[in-house]
Every structure is written in structure tokens, then in C-alpha cells.
Amino acid sequence: MRNTIGGRSVGMKTSHVASRALILRLFLGLALLSGFKAYAASPIEVKISIDTSRTLGPIDLTRYALGQGGLSEQPMIGDHIDQIRQLQPQTINLFVQEYFDLYPAHGQYHWVTLDKAIEAVLATGAKPIMNLCFKPKVLYPKIDDQIVDPTDYSEWEELVYQLVRHCNQDRKFGIEYWLVANEGDIGEPGGVPYKFPTFQSYLSYYQHTVSAIRRADPTVKVGGPAPADHKSPFIDALIDSAGRGEAPLDFLCFHLYSNDPREFEKLIDSMKAKLAKHSQLSHAETMIDQWNMSLGNPIMNPYFQPAFVLETTLGFYKKGLTRSSYYHIRDYFVDPAVFSKFLSDRGTAFMARWWNEMPQYDGLYDNQGRMRPAYYAFKLLSLIKGQELPVTGTSPDLKALAARGGSWVNVVLWNFPSEGAGKPYEVMVQFPSEGKGNVRVVRLNPESAVNNLEQIRTGRISDLERDPLRVTLRPYEIYWIEVTE
Image 1 (cartoon, rainbow, N blue to C red):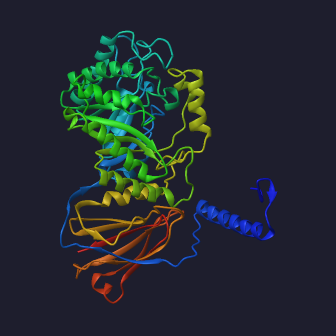
Image 2: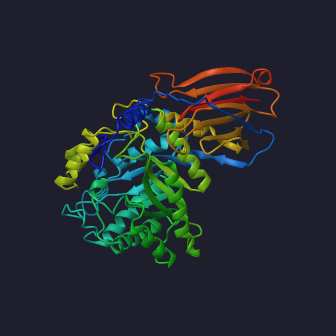
Image 3: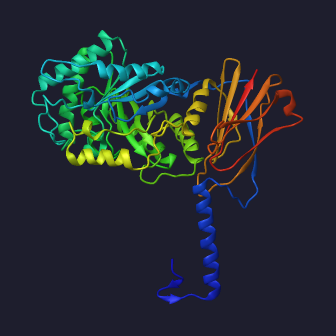
């Protein structure tokens, strides 16, 4: 940055002020990146009240669940099944990729490796969303992502039919959601062996595939197109085709990676508006089967990602999104020798560089299996289950969700700035209808090496009149309050 305007030097005073402003901006920027919090203004005092005397109806946020990247034939989540089970995910998006070798020769089927991955998902208490991404060599003898039609569509349909039959009849996995393709608008950069040259080519592939799925199990749900670009014409083409009755569409899938939760809300609104143009699609569900903060510009403040998970999920709930899959559970290295069997040399090199060399920030667990703070955000969301309770006193920055489940009331509070760096809030939390019971206050500390959920206060509800419950929420901070009645 130069202290010149139009090639001329500015005055000393202006230069001095500009330098001080630059230093301040750099300081604040470093503070955000490091997680250190420095605020010139005093906290804004607010009161949040949770009315436990009435309810707003049932709530269960566990439908906003998880996914695992298509990176290995191994059950990638196997080391963390018990921990994932604690998040109570309803679904886990599972990539049915070519490394499972489902069709090694004409008329021969190999299910064992895929079954192990499905069994790992089921062990968490979730059901898989089956994302079909495979291209058997016997039906696609040449490695080329733009070859999207098999050599024999009747044989392809029989393979898909046998896959669904095996899962839901022979093994009785009870898999409900079958997603046709993933990021077929970009091909190998999306980790998949096909790039549909036109939306008409995708529609043809979709119609053949869903016909086989429904023939094997008429009760399941089918959907697509899950493009990398949520503005892809594939979405409009599939909606219009289904609206004309040419193919079933039980759920519409799309992706977004962004640091701004409001972008997700806008996207959901736009997709619902597209579906609303067709009365025949009034039943169609909406699903974001891949989402996270920006992959190209991730925010490294350790407080950001957990708060981002809460803020974005609240938007899903408000906008009526049916399901979502946070991408993803675990970062994982890829084996180039495996991917070279169905991706080009260039595609294999891209996958190896992205997953083996580039720093990753997607997973609830990193490549070494270490838990990231975002895990605890999903843990807190799993507590918002039962009957939703009215909350007053929130603001565009300060949010809260509350639910009664059995003898417990759980409240999650967080501060997600709507603009700029944000401000701290001094929050008094009240339970005006509660006279008995105990209260526990816990802070999510993403910087702690252990004990990320820090208990900071316990006591009796009756003590709150004498000693009110107060917490300070700085930008991106999260608190959990539990009331035992």
C-alpha cells in the first residue's frame, strides 16, 4: 500500500493517520486469524428469556447430518463410530465409487467391500444416502470422464437393479435415499469419473438409472443432480423434466461452500422457488448433500467453524431444508494406484495433490484422526431435540435454540456477527417459568487441547433470582445451558 494519491505524495498528517489505520486493520486481522479477541467497545447488555411453560412444536436437528468423501474403499469412519453415534446423525452420505469394484466382469457382482462401508454407517445409527458415482470397466472400457453412457444400458440397469436388490432385500439395509451422480458438471476435479457434456446426457443417464432403482424397490426415494455449481443448468433441466413427468424426482440435491451462512439461505429459497413452478413436484425434498465453509478461502480462527455450523444449520431449519450432509466426517489420504484405475493421469494427480499434499479443513476429524471443534457444534445440535421452546431477546448477531427433551431443557447460544468483526454481548439468560431444578453452564472452547466443553457454572434455578445467569459471548463464541427439572 503506497502513501500516494494519483502519483503524488499525501501530507504527513494524512500519511500518519493512514499508517495508524493500516496498523489497526492489520492488528484486527491478525486477531481474527489467531483467535485472540480484542474489542474496543464494552459488551452490549441483553436479556434472553426461555419460556419453558409452552412449546412451539417438535424439533429434531439431527436430520442436518453428515457425509464422507469418496476417497477410499476402506470404511473411513470405522475408527470413530462410537463418537459419531453420539451426534445422532439420521443420514450419512456415502459415495458408491468405482474403488468398491461392484462389477468386476460381465454378470459378476462383488458386494463385500461396499457392505463393510454400509455396515460402518449403520453402526453409527444413521442410514446411508447412496451416492452413485461408479463406472465399471466392463461397461466403460476407456478411461475418459466425458464418456458417460455405458456400452450397454440394459446391462447397466441390471447392475443397478442388483445393487438395490442386494442392499434392501438380501441384506435388508433399508436404504431410502438413492442419489444419481455427484458433481457431474465438473468431472474428475470432483473426484468422479464422469463429466456430462450436456444436461440432456445427464437426463438420459438419470432416467435409465432411476428406472432400475425403482424396479428393484418402488418404495425408495431417487434424486439428483448434485452439481458442484449450484447455478448449473443441470438443476433446471432435471426439475423441468421431472415436472413434465418424464422421470421421478423425490429430492433435489445441490452443493455450496461459503463462509457466509446467508448464502445458504438464499440458495434454499431459490431451489424451493424452482420446484414450486411445478405442482407435480410439491412433494420433492431439498437436500444440500455437500456443504462447509469456503474450501479456497477457509477462515482459520478456531472459533469460526463451530459457530458457522450452528448458524448455517439454523438457516437450514428456518428455511425448511429437508436434509443436509456436512462434508465431511474425516479427512483421508487417497491411494493414487486405486484412483488411476478409473481416473485419467491428470485426474489422479489432482486427487493426490488435493487430498495428500494440500492442507485440509473439511473433516470433523483430520487426517490423523484428531477431533476438530466442529464436532462439538454437532454434539450441541443433537441436544436440540424434542419440543422447541420460545426464545426472546435474540438479535441478528446473537442466536439461541432451546428444546425440552424429557426432564431436560437444553439451550445453545452463540454470537455470529452479521456484519464486520462483530461485537461482544453480555447476556443475562432467564427461565421465568422455572422455580425448581438445577442449571449447568458450559462453554465451547475450541482452543483447548482437551476438555473443549468447559463447565463454568452449576447451581440451582432458585439461585438465579439472587445471582442471575450471565455469560459474555464474544464473536463466534458458543455456550450451552442445561436445566434439569
